[in-house]
Length: 205
Image (cartoon, rainbow, N blue to C red; front, side, top):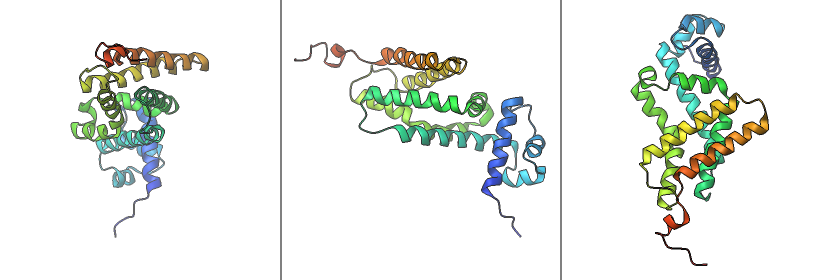
């Protein structure tokens, strides 16, 4: 008889793994400890996740999926380019700040050598809104023609820098100021000026 797997049990294992991975580090956490944290036997854990690598993979994919759904719920196709970038910027930072365990875990396993090349590629599909924003900016001639992947990568890395800074700031007003200032630094670095958008010609009044 095939044992029926319960979605809630799967979630319990992932939550237990997340807490332990953040507390102790991925390399220092065993499947036995994860099973014990979830209040079950290791054999039951293996029914859901045959290996520790399976747990690592499913956890990062679940996190990417949840974050992607949140960001996409904020975006509207008719947004101007700047507002599109700002929405991704603020939405990503606020999601990370509200999910610090997920954030810290994601930073631990970003190296493809830990999660595997296949999982790294699979997780990229959840963040297509980064590259869609760059494409929109290029097509509408609103941003400088820097390499596509460079702008997307810099957007993500700048978001991470602000999360680290804002996350250590207890004052809500200062935190918001950092988030806004960080965006202005990023946006001013990629945006085209009015003369650049019109080929050096002034716009007609």
